[in-house]
Image (tube, rainbow, N blue to C red; front, side):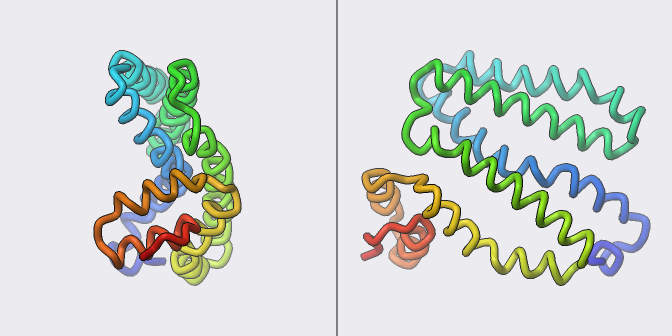
Length: 184
């Protein structure tokens, strides 16, 4: 509905692409810190290898999927490449011994976010803009429920995150989000 209001019917195909790419958001949230950790811990060749896997899967499936589904095939190739890159980064970071702590628990978050993204997409398709607006408004509370419910950060990790947040207002928000009482 928003695409129609803002851009017109010519851009309506973008909505399908958006829906296909939507599950990639939680994958990107997982992969970015893992690749940064690899680079920071002198495992640059692993980070480059993960990027190569993304490139090989994307270009290896691109023409076939585009031929099969058109512009949606491009989005599907992107999503498939991101899934393979994420799996490779997890396997390699476990091998390197730096997947412990919060990193090991992020797999559960990825599964929950993928389910929420799928449910949110279905709700937006079925009920339209109102469902999408409700999900956007509820997202901070859903994120907090996931982070606290799955105990993503232990007390030491939460304390470190709170200590790294310099602005008092932002620190209060971050502490609320991760369920840490050290917002002062």
